[in-house]
Length: 138
Image (tube, rainbow, N blue to C red; front, side, top):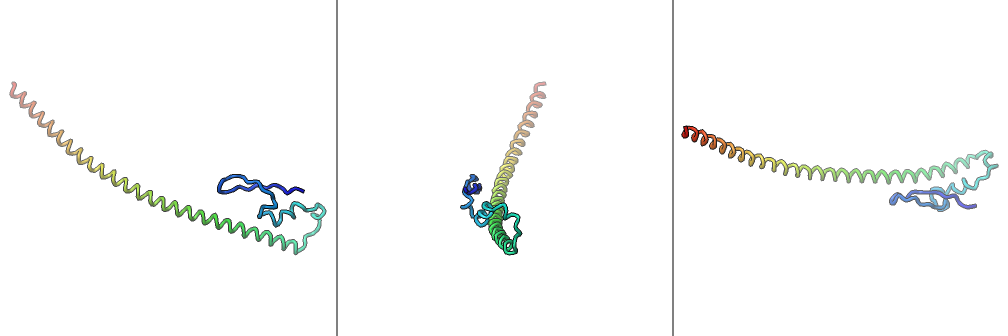
């Protein structure tokens, strides 16, 4: 009898890998029992030892699942730490750039005030000159 095909996803490449159930470590303890069961054995009562053995198998699988969750949790902690450090660096860089922009606007404001003062002085001088010519001409 051929072994059933199972699929798993490689988390690094996101590719689906097809593999035989006999090679799959997660299914190996119970795989042969589940696949090769006999229908007439389904009606037989389970003994306490059978239940105890299944409980041990299930418990051993939960240890593997727990260790995987701890690994994923560690990866989330690392990701959060990296994100926090990158955010702090981004805030510092933005603060530095904004201080440069504010300094630039401050110098532009001073230059604009000087230019407006010169323009005002020029217009006042021009008006005085025009009024002086007008008075002189009449």
